[in-house]
Image (tube, rainbow, N blue to C red):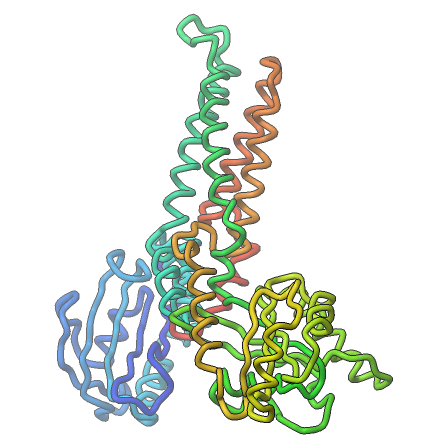
Length: 456
């Protein structure tokens, strides 16, 4: 960063009041700002107890622990100050106001600390995305995947691929530029293409994961579908353990899709409560049914909910028309039927339905088996995802474009097309450079850093 760059500051901890609040400062005037607040700059990377004063009035704002990290050996690569205060509203406001009054200091924008770390080479773009995912992680599985990305899982691999491509490109360009030199071997294209083919196969293998890495970020999508008044919203509330959806005895109450995020056995699950699927004249209800069909069609698992007295063959046929994923038939309201009727329903047709459960969403009967089955299904679904290299659509697009460029290079079998081979290899290396943020990524930086909060 330029020495003329502004110095930024922000509250980096949670919303007050809290036991401790952390205010961070980064930039060329961080040391001067610290000296203005506490009268000195302590020993680097050692916590120091100090009274924080307003630089103008010299009034004591708080007594705090202060840490000083001179650049470039800091999180952002710049001079960084961290002030650990008592987490009251007035204390935090007093320190932020004091910093704002200093020359060259301003409030940080969302993600600006991390952006400066990226611009100063402390993080590559995939590690930045891993950090964003780590902050957003809601389950242990998401946390583990995000941490691996933060530590360079895909970034290090992409950079290694890029270096191999550059080496292969150097062979081709040597053949083009120095073909008349006696000490340059004639057969340089073949080893270059051999290396390109090996890299192409390795990258393609990383892409052949069915998109499970991206799905772990978003969660297994489970749609609750079925006819009106079957107890879908009651089931959603039972699974969510809160009143997330309105429950009514009148059919057609649910009009829009309601989403609830759950942690099942440490894995993320997104539950969708959809409108009851039936034919009707109400245009609003028809739109709700259309949305319900669309979401069920894209779900990873569909829970088809019917009354316990419903015919199995009819449920099978109706579910098959809506869902293309695995279907579980939930025969709800068993608390309203005698045990003999429940046993007779076990023999009903289930040609397109994968599993069947008899439950009562209202009383909770049978819900233990359903929840255990959902947890097992989630674990099995994500069994191979935590080691997935690709966790974002941007990663997948970049690697797919890299494979396409390598395929073009490998299709140039004619040795007279050396320039075309070189161009395709150069294009593949450039795409991998964009993946890690080494080249030409200004157009996507704002999008990525907008995901962060102020102070990170």
